[in-house]
Amino acid sequence: MIKVSDALMSFRNMVLPEPVFDFWCAELGLLSRRQAAVARAVKVVSETPNTVSIWLKPNANFVGVLPGQHVNVGIEIDGHRFQRSYSVSGVRGRCFRITARKVANGKVSSYLNQYAQRGMRFSLGEVYGDVTVNSFAQKPALFLAGGIGITPIISMLESWSQTMRHQPVQLVYWGKTTQDLVFIERLKNLAQKHSWFELKILETQFLERNADGTPRLLAETSAWFQELKGRLTDFEAFACGSDGFVDQIRERFSPLVNTFQFESFSPLLVAAEAGVPIQVRLTKQNRTVTVPSGVNLLNALERAGVAVSSGCRRGTCNTCSCNKISGITQHQGDRSINEAMASGFKPCTQSALSDISLEM
Ligand code: FES
Image (cartoon, rainbow, N blue to C red; front, side, top):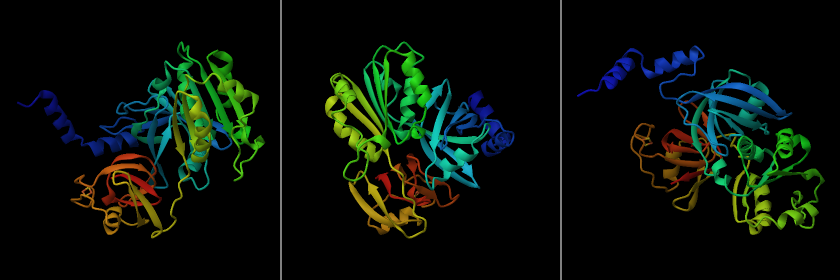
């Protein structure tokens, strides 16, 4: 027997199919969609000369995000859709904040820094990340942040500032100059207001250099480190910053703490033209193959000797789908560029624009 609700749903879909409903909602500036998660910018804050924060109000289809987690965010620029992954820098109710630092040749970060404004619309994708505000709720926490790596940490700190936290939190925050340090006034206010929170700021322009010219992030003999070192045994540590930052920090701090987790990032090099050799890391097979950029990825993988299950070869059967862990890819149909982690990634519809990693 057909349920009344199912019958009503079929009738609604017949009268107003999903694409038509979504199109007109978008045209009318509404956030309603049948299934898609979308959001509207409700507040834009210029944090530093090259960093912007955007508060987003999602529609009812968005699953929600916790402080510390990442969310895939899509935006249309000059007729092309781009997707980026951001760790949220704040959460208030269902609204959340993303923060973008302008990077050289960064299409989306440059656009947001220049043009972000209230009312701007975004599509929302997957939410992921195991390091969340809950991971440190009942434990002393040591946070180690480099530059824009502060984003997941500020969201957790601001969340705890609304609760009765008792466990200590120590943050050491490195940036090249004070201009590179984001949320600095907010962090200082939190440290003044809450006895559980201590803040140490280090400007790397004043630090000694390693042999390779990178700043020596930690002077073992410094008084603050000697003082801190003795009380870290029970701490759960979390570091976030560039690959080089996390490598240095992990080596120094992981022997001192109870657990050490980290998230690191590095700017991806994008192939400017087709045919440039791209490394594809296949994590399940524990091997790496080389394919040309800009060509159909399923064909390229097969030519490189990788056996990929496939069916339709045009994105409809789902047979070739896998998880994309990292890297920049381009949809060969709508030309949208995607830098975010993704499940249900279909190599038969994509080409690679940078080195990528697939769970395959
Ligand atoms: S082969 Fe069918 S979706 Fe890729």
